[in-house]
Length: 259
Image (cartoon, rainbow, N blue to C red; front, side, top):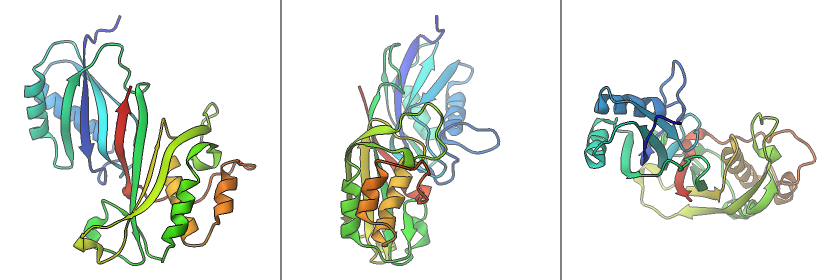
Protein backbone atom coordinates (compact mmCIF):
# COMPACT_ATOMS: atom_id res chain seq x y z
CA UNK A 1 0.00 0.00 0.00
CA UNK A 2 1.33 3.43 -0.98
CA UNK A 3 2.36 5.81 1.77
CA UNK A 4 1.06 8.73 -0.30
CA UNK A 5 -2.47 9.40 0.95
CA UNK A 6 -3.07 12.95 -0.35
CA UNK A 7 -2.95 13.88 -4.03
CA UNK A 8 -3.13 17.22 -5.85
CA UNK A 9 -3.11 18.19 -9.51
CA UNK A 10 -1.00 21.32 -10.00
CA UNK A 11 -1.08 23.23 -13.28
CA UNK A 12 1.84 25.41 -14.34
CA UNK A 13 3.18 27.22 -17.37
CA UNK A 14 6.84 27.79 -18.14
CA UNK A 15 9.31 29.18 -20.64
CA UNK A 16 11.63 26.29 -21.36
CA UNK A 17 14.47 28.16 -23.08
CA UNK A 18 17.02 27.83 -20.27
CA UNK A 19 16.04 24.32 -19.17
CA UNK A 20 17.04 20.86 -20.39
CA UNK A 21 13.42 19.75 -20.53
CA UNK A 22 11.03 18.70 -17.76
CA UNK A 23 12.63 15.47 -16.53
CA UNK A 24 15.26 15.67 -13.80
CA UNK A 25 18.75 14.77 -15.05
CA UNK A 26 22.11 14.88 -13.29
CA UNK A 27 24.25 17.92 -13.93
CA UNK A 28 21.72 20.02 -15.88
CA UNK A 29 18.96 22.48 -15.03
CA UNK A 30 15.44 21.10 -15.58
CA UNK A 31 11.91 22.31 -14.90
CA UNK A 32 11.21 19.30 -12.67
CA UNK A 33 14.32 19.98 -10.65
CA UNK A 34 13.34 23.61 -10.15
CA UNK A 35 9.79 22.61 -9.18
CA UNK A 36 11.04 20.14 -6.56
CA UNK A 37 13.58 22.60 -5.15
CA UNK A 38 10.88 25.23 -4.76
CA UNK A 39 8.40 22.84 -3.12
CA UNK A 40 11.14 21.66 -0.74
CA UNK A 41 11.78 25.28 0.25
CA UNK A 42 8.07 26.02 0.73
CA UNK A 43 7.20 22.83 2.63
CA UNK A 44 10.35 22.39 4.70
CA UNK A 45 10.75 18.86 6.06
CA UNK A 46 7.37 17.53 4.89
CA UNK A 47 7.62 14.52 2.60
CA UNK A 48 6.41 14.86 -0.99
CA UNK A 49 6.78 13.44 -4.48
CA UNK A 50 5.99 14.96 -7.87
CA UNK A 51 5.21 13.32 -11.21
CA UNK A 52 4.80 15.24 -14.47
CA UNK A 53 2.20 14.61 -17.16
CA UNK A 54 4.88 14.10 -19.83
CA UNK A 55 8.47 14.76 -20.75
CA UNK A 56 9.52 17.76 -22.81
CA UNK A 57 12.65 18.36 -24.86
CA UNK A 58 15.24 20.95 -23.92
CA UNK A 59 14.03 24.52 -24.64
CA UNK A 60 10.41 23.43 -25.18
CA UNK A 61 7.86 25.60 -23.33
CA UNK A 62 4.39 24.92 -21.94
CA UNK A 63 1.36 27.18 -21.71
CA UNK A 64 -0.48 24.43 -19.85
CA UNK A 65 1.47 21.72 -18.04
CA UNK A 66 0.49 19.64 -15.02
CA UNK A 67 2.13 17.56 -12.35
CA UNK A 68 0.77 15.47 -9.52
CA UNK A 69 1.83 16.32 -5.98
CA UNK A 70 1.87 13.34 -3.58
CA UNK A 71 1.77 14.01 0.18
CA UNK A 72 1.51 12.14 3.46
CA UNK A 73 0.18 15.07 5.48
CA UNK A 74 -2.56 17.62 4.71
CA UNK A 75 -1.80 21.18 3.62
CA UNK A 76 -3.82 24.31 3.02
CA UNK A 77 -3.79 24.39 -0.80
CA UNK A 78 -4.41 28.15 -1.09
CA UNK A 79 -1.51 28.95 1.21
CA UNK A 80 0.74 26.48 -0.59
CA UNK A 81 -0.15 27.88 -4.02
CA UNK A 82 0.53 31.45 -2.92
CA UNK A 83 3.95 30.57 -1.47
CA UNK A 84 4.76 28.35 -4.44
CA UNK A 85 4.04 31.16 -6.93
CA UNK A 86 6.14 33.67 -4.98
CA UNK A 87 9.19 31.42 -4.76
CA UNK A 88 9.25 30.02 -8.30
CA UNK A 89 11.68 31.67 -10.77
CA UNK A 90 10.23 34.23 -13.22
CA UNK A 91 10.11 31.75 -16.12
CA UNK A 92 7.85 29.27 -14.25
CA UNK A 93 4.37 30.12 -12.96
CA UNK A 94 1.88 28.06 -10.99
CA UNK A 95 -1.72 28.46 -12.15
CA UNK A 96 -3.85 26.27 -9.90
CA UNK A 97 -4.02 23.36 -7.46
CA UNK A 98 -6.89 20.94 -7.00
CA UNK A 99 -7.35 17.69 -5.05
CA UNK A 100 -7.57 14.43 -7.00
CA UNK A 101 -8.31 10.87 -5.90
CA UNK A 102 -5.74 8.19 -5.26
CA UNK A 103 -6.88 6.45 -8.47
CA UNK A 104 -5.91 9.46 -10.59
CA UNK A 105 -3.04 8.69 -13.00
CA UNK A 106 -1.49 11.83 -14.42
CA UNK A 107 0.02 10.01 -17.40
CA UNK A 108 -2.78 7.62 -18.36
CA UNK A 109 -5.57 10.14 -17.61
CA UNK A 110 -4.06 12.79 -19.91
CA UNK A 111 -6.39 12.15 -22.85
CA UNK A 112 -5.68 15.02 -25.26
CA UNK A 113 -2.53 17.09 -25.74
CA UNK A 114 -2.47 20.09 -28.03
CA UNK A 115 0.87 21.47 -29.21
CA UNK A 116 1.53 24.75 -31.00
CA UNK A 117 4.70 25.35 -33.00
CA UNK A 118 5.51 29.05 -33.45
CA UNK A 119 7.86 30.31 -36.14
CA UNK A 120 8.57 33.09 -38.61
CA UNK A 121 10.33 33.17 -41.96
CA UNK A 122 11.84 35.39 -44.64
CA UNK A 123 14.36 37.29 -42.53
CA UNK A 124 15.61 37.54 -38.95
CA UNK A 125 13.41 39.20 -36.29
CA UNK A 126 14.54 40.68 -32.99
CA UNK A 127 16.83 38.34 -31.01
CA UNK A 128 14.48 38.81 -28.03
CA UNK A 129 12.08 36.42 -29.79
CA UNK A 130 14.63 33.58 -29.77
CA UNK A 131 13.05 31.98 -26.71
CA UNK A 132 9.54 32.06 -28.18
CA UNK A 133 9.71 31.00 -31.82
CA UNK A 134 11.89 29.40 -34.47
CA UNK A 135 13.27 31.36 -37.41
CA UNK A 136 13.58 30.13 -41.00
CA UNK A 137 15.41 32.83 -43.01
CA UNK A 138 14.25 31.70 -46.46
CA UNK A 139 10.90 32.51 -48.07
CA UNK A 140 8.18 29.89 -47.55
CA UNK A 141 4.83 29.19 -49.20
CA UNK A 142 2.07 29.44 -46.54
CA UNK A 143 -0.61 27.92 -48.79
CA UNK A 144 1.44 24.77 -49.31
CA UNK A 145 2.22 24.59 -45.58
CA UNK A 146 -1.50 24.75 -44.80
CA UNK A 147 -2.22 21.86 -47.17
CA UNK A 148 0.67 19.85 -45.74
CA UNK A 149 -0.54 20.36 -42.15
CA UNK A 150 -4.05 19.16 -43.03
CA UNK A 151 -2.65 15.85 -44.34
CA UNK A 152 -1.68 14.80 -40.79
CA UNK A 153 -5.28 14.74 -39.51
CA UNK A 154 -6.62 11.23 -38.94
CA UNK A 155 -5.02 7.89 -38.08
CA UNK A 156 -1.67 7.27 -39.73
CA UNK A 157 1.58 5.39 -39.29
CA UNK A 158 4.10 7.91 -37.92
CA UNK A 159 7.15 5.61 -38.05
CA UNK A 160 9.11 8.24 -39.96
CA UNK A 161 8.16 10.94 -37.46
CA UNK A 162 9.98 9.62 -34.41
CA UNK A 163 13.59 9.74 -33.25
CA UNK A 164 15.24 6.51 -32.03
CA UNK A 165 12.05 4.56 -31.28
CA UNK A 166 12.01 1.75 -28.73
CA UNK A 167 11.15 -1.76 -29.84
CA UNK A 168 7.60 -1.83 -28.45
CA UNK A 169 6.42 1.62 -29.54
CA UNK A 170 3.07 2.03 -31.29
CA UNK A 171 3.62 3.96 -34.54
CA UNK A 172 -0.04 4.19 -35.54
CA UNK A 173 -1.43 7.33 -33.94
CA UNK A 174 -4.61 9.37 -34.31
CA UNK A 175 -4.21 13.08 -34.90
CA UNK A 176 -7.44 14.77 -33.83
CA UNK A 177 -6.65 18.06 -35.55
CA UNK A 178 -3.78 19.53 -37.52
CA UNK A 179 -3.73 23.06 -38.92
CA UNK A 180 -1.53 25.95 -39.93
CA UNK A 181 -2.24 29.65 -39.72
CA UNK A 182 -0.54 33.02 -39.99
CA UNK A 183 -1.53 35.21 -37.04
CA UNK A 184 -2.27 38.89 -37.38
CA UNK A 185 -0.51 40.53 -34.48
CA UNK A 186 1.33 43.78 -33.90
CA UNK A 187 4.52 42.44 -32.35
CA UNK A 188 7.09 45.08 -33.29
CA UNK A 189 9.91 42.62 -32.62
CA UNK A 190 8.83 40.61 -35.66
CA UNK A 191 9.89 43.50 -37.94
CA UNK A 192 6.80 42.93 -40.12
CA UNK A 193 7.60 39.23 -40.56
CA UNK A 194 4.77 36.66 -40.39
CA UNK A 195 3.91 34.93 -37.12
CA UNK A 196 3.11 31.34 -38.12
CA UNK A 197 1.62 28.63 -35.91
CA UNK A 198 1.34 24.92 -36.62
CA UNK A 199 -1.32 23.44 -34.31
CA UNK A 200 -1.72 19.72 -33.66
CA UNK A 201 -3.67 17.71 -31.09
CA UNK A 202 -3.85 14.01 -30.27
CA UNK A 203 -3.93 11.43 -27.53
CA UNK A 204 -0.17 11.07 -27.37
CA UNK A 205 2.99 11.89 -29.26
CA UNK A 206 6.34 10.17 -29.69
CA UNK A 207 9.78 11.67 -29.20
CA UNK A 208 10.35 14.55 -31.65
CA UNK A 209 7.09 13.73 -33.45
CA UNK A 210 5.62 17.24 -33.40
CA UNK A 211 8.97 18.83 -34.25
CA UNK A 212 9.37 16.44 -37.21
CA UNK A 213 5.85 17.26 -38.36
CA UNK A 214 6.59 20.99 -38.10
CA UNK A 215 9.91 20.60 -39.90
CA UNK A 216 8.22 18.64 -42.66
CA UNK A 217 5.62 21.31 -43.40
CA UNK A 218 8.44 23.87 -43.51
CA UNK A 219 10.29 21.63 -45.99
CA UNK A 220 7.14 21.66 -48.13
CA UNK A 221 6.97 25.44 -47.78
CA UNK A 222 10.50 25.85 -49.09
CA UNK A 223 9.92 23.42 -51.97
CA UNK A 224 12.15 20.59 -50.74
CA UNK A 225 9.24 18.15 -50.47
CA UNK A 226 5.86 17.75 -52.14
CA UNK A 227 2.41 17.12 -50.71
CA UNK A 228 2.45 13.69 -52.33
CA UNK A 229 5.65 12.85 -50.46
CA UNK A 230 4.09 13.93 -47.16
CA UNK A 231 1.10 11.67 -47.83
CA UNK A 232 3.39 8.76 -48.75
CA UNK A 233 5.45 9.25 -45.59
CA UNK A 234 2.37 8.39 -43.50
CA UNK A 235 2.24 4.91 -45.05
CA UNK A 236 5.99 4.32 -44.79
CA UNK A 237 7.72 1.73 -46.93
CA UNK A 238 11.05 2.65 -45.31
CA UNK A 239 11.87 3.02 -41.62
CA UNK A 240 14.34 5.90 -41.81
CA UNK A 241 13.26 8.95 -39.80
CA UNK A 242 12.73 12.18 -41.70
CA UNK A 243 15.59 14.69 -41.47
CA UNK A 244 13.67 17.84 -40.61
CA UNK A 245 13.59 18.20 -36.82
CA UNK A 246 12.38 21.76 -36.22
CA UNK A 247 14.19 23.76 -33.50
CA UNK A 248 12.84 23.10 -30.00
CA UNK A 249 12.38 26.75 -28.99
CA UNK A 250 9.31 27.12 -31.22
CA UNK A 251 7.36 24.30 -29.56
CA UNK A 252 4.81 24.80 -26.77
CA UNK A 253 2.48 22.39 -25.04
CA UNK A 254 -0.60 24.58 -25.44
CA UNK A 255 -3.25 22.57 -23.59
CA UNK A 256 -3.66 19.27 -21.81
CA UNK A 257 -7.06 17.71 -21.13
CA UNK A 258 -7.59 15.06 -18.47
CA UNK A 259 -10.30 12.42 -18.38
